[in-house]
Length: 474
Image 1 (tube, rainbow, N blue to C red):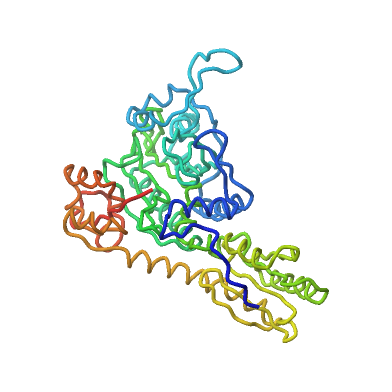
Image 2: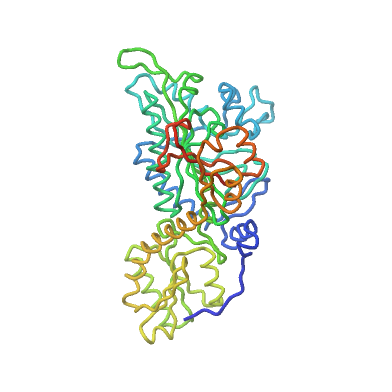
């Protein structure tokens, strides 16, 4: 049954992308602004998306042999000041507690911006010999970084994330593990679950994580052509090991400093999901991520229709699809369809009396809007088969969009021209100098990552013939 044409409920992307983004947050019931500036309240539907992200990420983190732990929210301020580059990098973003229990504290406490320092303190306690290495830790937590220009999911003063921290016997082992996390955990999840294509590479030395010797990043293109950093993995060298005395006895009983890494992703991925796949009708969620993959909609109340819809929902569920029944016939059909489109549910199945007379239902894809009549008997298998097809098609569409909006450049002017609407791909040598950096930053363009010409990740930015991707970013 074809739905009547409905007036748009969102600001069109082409008209005002930031306003569209805010409309999606509100209309799809994802999140609200919190009572303190820069904080957010994640609503149940939005948190359901985050829970699925957590589950898929956590599975991959455990396959990488890291174990979950938990460390304190409050960190003694003296811990951060031990690593000068680290504290300098985070100083403008710190929230500091000076009073507790009605008294001034002897030492101010920093509300966790990241946990390298406190985890380094405990690594030093737990590591004695090479037999204790590698030590592979991860925690799911909240962090606070005082954000001057907050935007829900993208930049908030408090957000949710996972942060991994590891210690290794050698630089080579630490570097290999940092790359493993980026490729086998982050990229695998983002490409195969979020259906978001990525560029993987290293950050310029001036844009590394504070205290790192190398930063690897996942960069994605949003529907407005801007870049979003989806996750990072850092080689910390021996910087934190020397500050926190993370020492071990090697096989010859000589004392050595460990080599450490840290890596993280956050609720920023929810913002990336919205902006990478969303359209003027709202969210579009890949089936591999969706916590509701299909919805069976009762078009009009009636015992025959209700019974058929309930049985169909059960049969679809038996085919391994996460399915919901919408039998709210007191609410207009058009309104209900709009609600499910806003929420980005991959497939909806409309069950009405006219279709049932022919033993058929209408199956609609959220990503393309394509509709097909399917027999009631064949609908469960057809819906299940659509899951993989939609997943593949969404990744293909996002990849085509990114590649279409990426231009080769050979000069700074060409980089700026390309970055006005998408990515610029340019020889790293063209944008490596300080003058080039200043010219780009002046136009709000940055180097997002550096790759080898074949797309692989270089060991450092001094390798010959490297390629840089430049863009405006979030």
